[in-house]
Image (cartoon, rainbow, N blue to C red; front, side, top):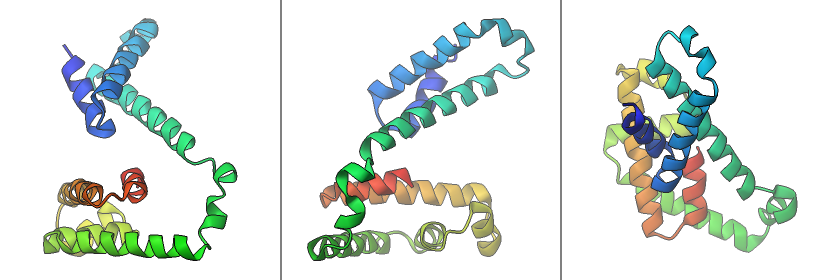
Length: 164
């Protein structure tokens, strides 16, 4: 009864059908393993959503940890190499070009969020729009920029953008 909604939720976060299916199965295993506590659950739908969200975050955290053993890769040292700095400048330029292709309001919302570090609530108040509208702009901007960066073969920046 709830499988499709949980699967859709995990798929929206992971963008991987196989991982979403695995996480969905894990969610229902968690429910089964804690079935003795289900009588105290007031809203089962919300309960499932929270378990799914936690499973997704845990899986994404594991992926991130696998990607960033900084001591092993010496990333911090690489940042100062001239050729690396040129690569990062090029990636930044491509990202800015992608941002320039966004509709003006979406561009402004995205810049306020990612460049200025403002919260959704701050942006909503400043632009006199709803928090959900801000969220929608960010999601659409991220989806567009992921595609744009993928077309320009900027995998590292794509991973960074996906995480943040």
